[in-house]
Image (cartoon, rainbow, N blue to C red; front, side, top):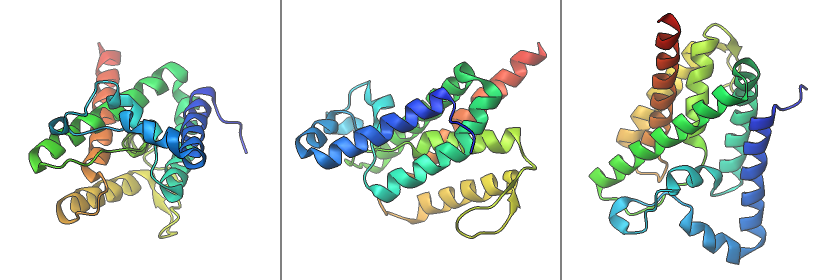
Length: 195
């Protein structure tokens, strides 16, 4: 198994460390309320939350699947792009996911905070699909081999469907926002290269 590149490793370790800390020391977990992404109408929103929410996770399965995706897609992208460009895509996906989520919570009147690296992860997923569209991926559920471009399209369509039909507490539109941020940044890079 190849060694994790430095930015992916740092992000993974930060997320896992904060998760373990919040589970083992409940008093510290309560302080993390300041790091969650709160809807603007709550009066609890602060600008740093546009980034810090991505380092927090709400349960074992939440962090497990996000870190698995970070390892599967992020490590490969960092090896191809290098640390600087990879960090830019992570930040762009995280910010765009946060902004879309703030807009959705504003429109829906929601008062619940958002946590998790899923927006960044969906940005990495879209990036992987754009860079390696014909690479074969075998998802955990269902374990059917498919090209990366189809995998990304299916996940994007599912998020859109769930965003409109479910009220399950999952920030589906934030996931789409992460994909949007990654897409726009990659398009910008490609256009800049053509000039």
